[in-house]
Length: 490
Figure (cartoon, rainbow, N blue to C red):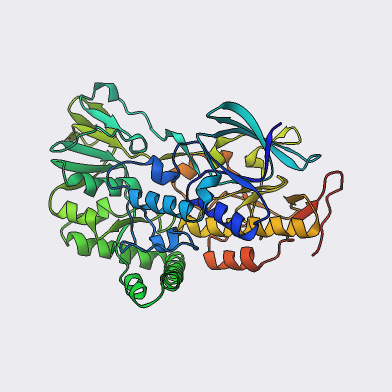
């Protein structure tokens, strides 16, 4: 017989560990298992091993709401974040629920049985598990495949070509010429870090990204930690940073030109009046149409000023044996080329789903409160904010799942299904974001609606009101096997 648990959580990264905590705290009478395809927990923070890997959000909001981040650095490196996730899992016994080396192959829902059947491949081979509720915490990109455009002449290049997602541990770039292709968060992290040991690092970009510096340490957080108990200091700092982030985002969207002027002015302050900011740091889009790139303690600007790094804005004609030939005619010499060209989006790990034998096409679905799908029962997914820390949304999703489970127990129902009955509901893009990894997958993604609860807030305070204190009945249907789906009121 297949093993059965009340809740299957897929993924043992920040989202999965947080979901495990809330399940055992808020639904202690429910059993759960966390399925993790890799042999380590940590998700992104276990996968990426490139030099300088770090968060682009402060750890007081990227950290768990229930387990304070107590280190001095608010912008933390990858190994420290991974250690924090592991410590959290051990502290609360969540690690005992993780099945490592267990990949989900498919999931099928049966209304007659009110359960999911999950096909998995584990250390002992293929088998099945069943559960009443499925929580997909597997991130948003493929761990096995990165976005890697082909470049003419790459086979002629005489050096080493690497992608940050698959960083070779033995790569030695000390004293060598390095070219990093890209302008996103990974590129601006790699360049100053590699510049410490390389002869020179060139960041080659087709178009610029907004780059902003902030201190690696939060002086207010460190002061509060010295004056208050750790949980109180952490809570105050968390809300301080949430509110500041929301204020900045709102002002950015309300006054994009003013914000753009200020951001570019800050870059000029770091690089000096003679630097060509217009070419290398002035994007064609407004701030927050794509995520801003964070550089702690201005490390990228420091590397540029001291001559260890250079930014080149041009297009690639082809790779040549000695480096990269640009459309302008210039050739950039290189011993190592790093293709920081982005991720390959894969929502919910690319797992195929069926409901009562019919395949689920996510592109035909509306997302409900940014965490469930129209007419797909007992399934939640975690997709964090594009304008704030991932964990803020992950935390709300986990708590809302617990609210639903407890509501179903109270009402003695086994099935909960988001369902749209509004014929005037228009379908809109999955998320209002122009980043390449989103646009490349737009035709495969679910839609958001034009009205709540189908429309994304992208606002933590509004989501707190909607998901922590709001109704669990808006556009939601509760039922049991063999019953016609009807709305039930508490």
